[in-house]
Length: 516
View 1 (cartoon, one colour):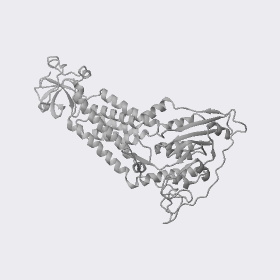
View 2 (view 1 turned 45 degrees about the vertical axis):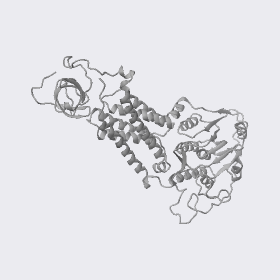
View 3 (view 1 turned 180 degrees about the vertical axis):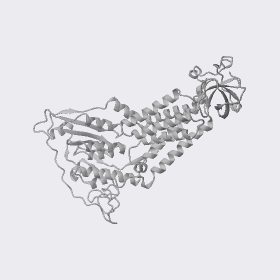
View 4 (view 1 turned 120 degrees about the vertical axis):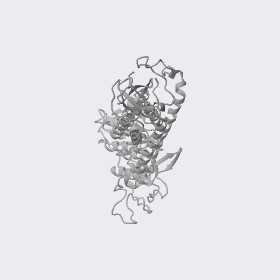
C-alpha cells in the first residue's frame, strides 16, 4: 500500500518555521557587536580625533609616500640548480573554495624544494578562499615568488602580496581589490565592515613581506589617498611599469624560463602539480549551481520522507545529496565538524518526528531550522559580522531558501503527477487485494479520502506498534501510531486522534472487543 501523506496543515507549518528561525539567525549575524575587534593596523584605541594613522581610512589627508627600493631576486644556487627542485603552483581563473585544497596539497606533497613559484593570472574571486590561500602562502618556509603573468586583480592581489617576491611580466596589472557583492546580476558595493576587513588583510599581508601598507590599502578603499600616487576617490591598480616605480616589483620577466634563470635554477627539476579527481569533484560540488541542486534534492527527499511514515527511498536520496553537499564543502575547508554536528542533530530531530513523536510539531520545525542553519554556515568562512556586511550571509540564505521553496514546489508536483506515471503504477497499489479480516489480517485496502470516521473506533493491533504499525479498525487494515508506548500484536486499541491520514491509538482497556 502506498504510505499515506501527512496533513497539508503539517506540511505548511514546516516552511514558515524554517524561515522564521533563519531570519532570527540573520538578525543575530547583523548585531553590531557580533564581529571581531578592529585589527591594530586598521585603528588604534589611543588615536586622537583628526590624527592620520597608517590604516586609518577615516582621515581625508593624503598619506605621505616614500619609495623603498625593492630587493632583487636572490640567487638560490651556486650553479644552475642541477639536482634541486622548484615547485610551480598555478593561481589561475576564478579564486574559489575548490582551489584551496589544491594549493595546500601542492605545498604539502613537495617538501624540500628550493623555491615555490605561484603563477598568477586571475580577475579575483571569493574573499574567504583568497584568505585561506594567503595564509598557506605566508606559511611557506622557502622563498616564494608570485609571478604575475598578465593580472592579479582583487583576490589575486591579496595572494600575490603574501609571496616574498613579486615578478611582473610585460603588460601585467595588480590591484582593484575592493570587495563587491553580486545582486541581481549586478556588482554592488559592500558595507564598511567588509571593506575594513579586506583593507586590514591587505595591509597586514604587505607589511609582513616588507611592502608599503598604504599602497595595499589604496587597492581596497577608494577613500585612501597616497600622496603622489593615487588621489582620494580612485582605487589603486598598478601596471608593470608603475609597480617598478613604486618599489612593488622585485623584477620583470616574460617567461618561467627567464624567472628560473634569474633565480639560479635554470636546470632545476620543475614540479608542476595538477588538480586530482577528488579536488575536481570538490570544486564541482561546491559550485553555486551544483550546491543549490544538491540542497534542493536533499530537502525534497527529507520533505517527502517526513510526509510518510517509515524510511524509504526519498529519505535515503535526500541524506545522500546533503552528504555530498557537506562532504564537498568540508574538503574545501568551508564546512567543519560544527556544521556537520548541526546537520546530524537536525536529522536526529527529524527522525524523532517521524518515528517517535505523533504529529508535526516542535521537533520537526526545529530539525528543519537546524538543517537550514547548517547549510548556511557551510557556505561561508568569514567572521559573522563581516560575512553579513559583505552580503555572504544574504547570498547563502537566498540559496537555501530558494532550494527549500523549490523542494516544496517539486513535492506537490510529485504528489499530483507521479501517481499517474507508468513507473509509479508499477510501484503503488491502488486497489483492494481482499478483505483484510478474511485474509488473516494480511490484506491491504486503498486509503479512504476521509479518515475522521475512525475517531473513537476500537480495533486490534495486527502488528507490533513500535510505535508505528498496523491495526484492524472497523474491519479495515490501516497504518497507525501509538501515542505513548509500544503495543504488542493482538492488543485491543482505541483511536484517540486523527490528523489528516495519521491515526493515533492507545491501549483499549474496555472489554468485549473482538479480536481479528
